[in-house]
Length: 296
Length: 251
Image 1 (cartoon, each protein chain N blue to C red):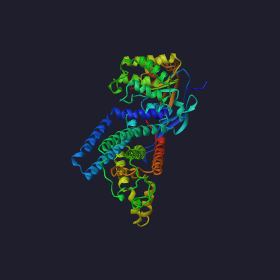
Image 2 (tube, one colour):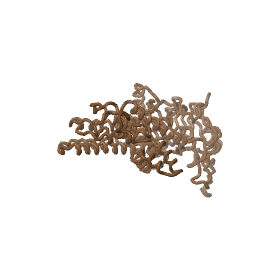
Image 3 (spheres, rainbow over the protein chains, first blue to last red):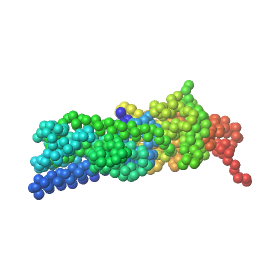
Image 4 (tube, helix red, strand yellow):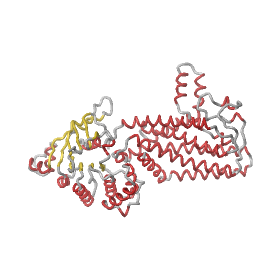
């Protein structure tokens, strides 16, 4: 474990020294300014819209940071040949994979914490100007099952909502937590990709497409499959159940429309779902990496 | 007593670039052993298989055939590398770290306690004469300084075996002398040193035994003095004869 943390420490130090975090802070400041401008408009719809834009920015920048940081980890170790002195020590390749994952994930976690903290503080200090949306608008993203979706969201007693709570901080916390869990899957996926694709740029591009595809189309694949003939239907259904459903971790609407927090059970299930997928992808990465010959 | 390095009938093949190209044999049935406390020179022309053999010893490359052991442990086991230090031919370290941070990182990898780490870092930076620049990023170091950081990291775990891949390549005469001094000092401490070099004068000075390899096979092995006596010439000419070099007539 010590070795894994040592490798993770170097990853975080590199990010810090490369000044990636400073870009994040600048971005955060911009978001803050954007939110700070809400009083000029004094219109709940615009406020909600601005919140949505800010959260979208947080999502995009978090994914960009996670993908670009992770994509270069192992290729740059090979390219700079730092992998050789490292593997000449009693370090297993599994520990290298875990260390890289832990470093990227922790770095992403720190970035998210800063983002959400700024967002929550500014948003709430202005009295949480968002207004409740129509019931049906609140999608139940944190529903680890293909059936639990918008169609039932407005039915009484359905879903995963806890009783209405006036505590918006818990929603922010859940939003940040599930976002971080989603990034665990993303980082593990990119790490796996970095062992398959030769160049970090090609890996990053492919991963952006895959992640974007899952976030935008993932939840609709099942519905699309039902309208297809065989064997396309089966293929799409297999794909639907095989891909990690990153959209389930998206609590943005809960934050924007001031919904009550998600119940503990679905939140824990989503966490377990992310952990399972991340572990699966890390094992796959290790299986590829352990067979790879490295020549000095 | 167990040999520090034991290589038996080692064979390494690299796959061809395409299906029609046959695999390239880098090491072909190489066997050798290095005893504790020896300074062993591993010689051969470029492409002879020296680095590939070292890569197998360090676990970077899996052997196609044969076996290799470090301290009696198969090189496939990461624990076999617990007691070794490795200095690559070209120094490549995390350039954003300082020398002190780099040594601390590797000490952590070996699980060395904090107090002991501090003590070793001080001693090693003094040994390689980098004390005054210990808090400067490695990217600001000259090539010689980077090579010395490399040597310090190879010694952080107080290894019983040091594997050096052309440790003096690219160094100025002063840098070479420093590296040679360090090797001599390690020898006096009873450490085993296994190193490859093209500097045959240097090999003659510091090595107890040498192996000359060519086309992936050991062509000659023995004490430097024995080889020089056997061929009745200096080590450079011994080397050329063993690898089958025919000088142009008139030379």
